[in-house]
Picture (cartoon, rainbow, N blue to C red):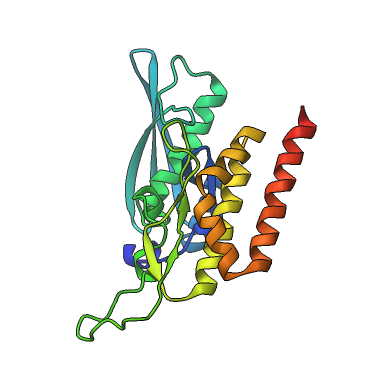
Length: 226
C-alpha cells in the first residue's frame, strides 16, 4: 500500500485520551497493521539513558520498508520521568510502537495535531464564490484542558448547519465532563463555557435541558464519592 492510502484511514474512534494528550491505541494499531500487511514485523532497540531519563526505540517493517521511532518515557504532562520503573517503560514502548506504525501513515495526522486525515477534510471550491448565509453557527471541534487552560471549549471553525453545531457542542461538553476529576472541575467547565451553553438553549431547548441534566449527574457523582 502507498503511504497516502494508509494516511487516509480515519482512526478517531481508536484514539485514547489522558489529561490533555491524545494517543492512538497501540493494540488497535497493531491489529490494523497486520490486516493491511500480514508480513509486518517490529523490533524494540535497547533503551538509552539521558541523565536520569530514558528514551525507547522501535522499528516497524511493513509495506516493504522499515521506519524507526523514538519516544521518551513520559508522564501525562509530556514530561520525562526520572528513573522510570518497568511499568512506565512498558507503556512508553507500546506508545513508541504505535508511533512507529504511524510513520507508515496510520494515524499520522493524530501526531501532527490534526483531527481528521487530509482526505476527509473538505476544501472550499477555488473557482466558485463562497455562498454567504444570513447566519453562521460556530462549530466546536475539540476541548482543551490542563494547568494553563481552564476546560474551555475551543471554537475555531464555522458551519452553516445548526444541527452540526449542536452535536459538536454536546460532544465537546461530554468529553470535558468525562475528563473531570472533581466536582470543582464540573463547576469550572460550566462556568467557563456558560456563554456557549446559554446559546445552545436558544437553538435547542431539549438538548440544553439534556446537557444541564448531564452536568447535574456529574456534580452528584463527585459529591457521592466524598
